[in-house]
Image 1 (cartoon, one colour):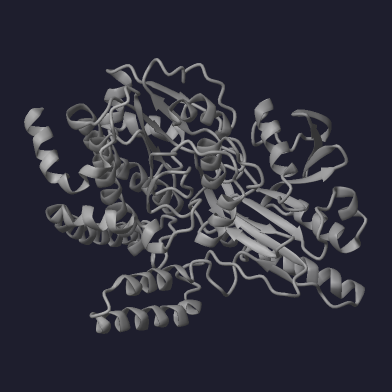
Image 2 (image 1 turned 90 degrees about the horizontal axis):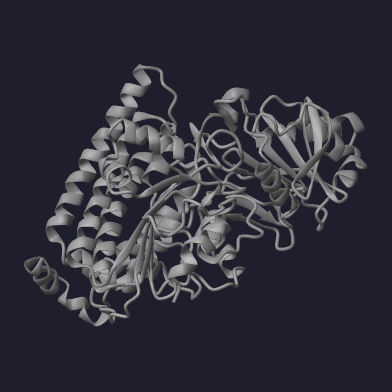
Length: 564
């Protein structure tokens, strides 16, 4: 152990000023495996893909339990709840702000910053570190974190000079990252070819191999390096998201061998982190492993019905206008001609150009030229990155997709509409009726007086105070679950002030749910394992008996205990 400590003292000498003073308090290392449901973790353990986690649970007495994350089953909602205990007004991964006429999309830094700026409670990561998260939780150190309380440049959110220095200290690991990147690209090409020959459904679109390399190799290695440094320095709380399973689950399915097999590499990084905690930690730590939500197998709405949901809405509006001899209103959706990712790469290149020393003028010019080219040509990538949005100044209906959840807004009215107001207007009532009858839509939620109205093609019900009443026909919630906490979650989702006038769940047959994005694995709504992530922690924290019926509950049961 002494030799190990001496090795790290020499290796991390340049960071010695960041070493935290011993205060006698235990620290927390929280590792999130994004979108991994409790059932899929158990399956991966049985198949031998998670030997470290299996040893922790079966031999070392760590508690493994399932919990209920609430709705929407999406990372921005869950991380806001976990970090801050506050996740109001985050109704989906993508939603629309009627007042500002702005589509909030969490694939965009601007969209996540919109959410971050509206969170006012203190974050549980104050004085600690946030790696590969959407939100910073008030962390002192961030890397690959999208939105922060204090505005930062792209370079800063990627880790800044600290991350650059850490990379420079690991030349061998950087070489290994390069080798693994080539192997990952070959693996992607092989798996795609095998899938096509076997006629399996996948959605590995054009840029996905490069996204996969960035996520599965580069980011995973860099975040692990940063966590190991923090453990040595004695940083009091570290929260980091391993996002690789989520990416592969969306493209190949949550129970696919591609997604489950990749867990072995995350498991090996957890083993390295545990070794550092035991051998060279700057304080005593508790290690917690969790997921923020689950995922369910899905079928693409567009593939099943030959058109995206937005086109379905537009076709209904056009038909109603033709019947009345009027000009059709326009529907604008989260799948359109301007990419929500459009500014990311140019902004990174511009940030790098600004950081380039003035004497390197040729390098600066080259970076800016490449960034300009990318910015000009982003619009031609409709098949490469299909998740897009556009809001026109004359819009009347806005549709946002968030995997198995979609929100429809009647944007010509600034206020949230109730069911009575929707049914009183012929155009809106016709759209409601035809969406209700559509086989791809399993449930529509609206505000109806003092209650939330949930309706499907076969029945309707009302939810007030978490109690389901007034069931006519088949209870619309029945296929998604009958537990009372689900009813409470649905009611809370529909009541959010910036939820859609219509809240749509993809239809669910007990195994697959319809996804409004082109995905093989989906989350956002209810159905299957979407609402049931896992939690692993040492005995003595009380996690096995804690009531966890929303991501907010995890803030009080775990994160707040380590807040400074």
